[in-house]
Image 1 (cartoon, rainbow, N blue to C red):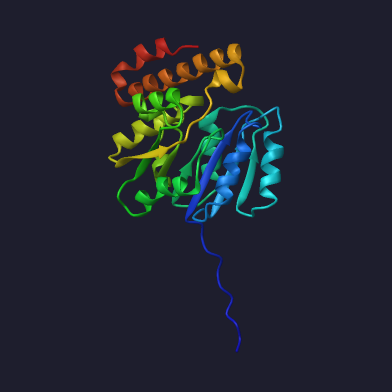
Image 2: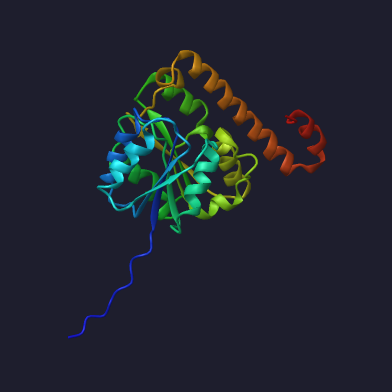
Length: 242
């Protein structure tokens, strides 16, 4: 009996992991993704890291055909890294994770996307609980800043590219969901945390990095507000002038 060739299954769920200078942490996250069966694609975006981040990605990809590596020659910021990953997949559902997570488990990755696949939400916000007091507090105080999400990929087409510059991406994504009527749902990630910038980037550089991050976050709020309320354009253009 002649065998009829089957078409390869189209990807349903893709994980996108942007990373910059995460040689100390990313290996653990990649191991978790390797053990997460629901993923059809794992897109790793090295955002111009000068360390061994890309090398560690390549080592992991050698053992998992679902992993695809994209490298930015220079650091373009988290928002651009996510958009680069999105452009590389046709999956209708996306999981986004930070590269420095601690204590993450495969079932928690699954918990981020299940409510979206089951049509109980259009986007989930993964919030740390019981991992580390500093990250627990910041997550629940500012849930709109979490980098751990599951979502319908079509939401990304509504996200302001200008507002998504650097670490403004999470703010721009959350505001886009609210403005377009997408339903959000909180998913507790028990025991998960990530090191503060001061911990793994060094105290002084970590402080500068955090200030830079919050500057981009505040800028994102201004940009989205300016785009939504055109009459305020001149005011915000002055505030945001380089």
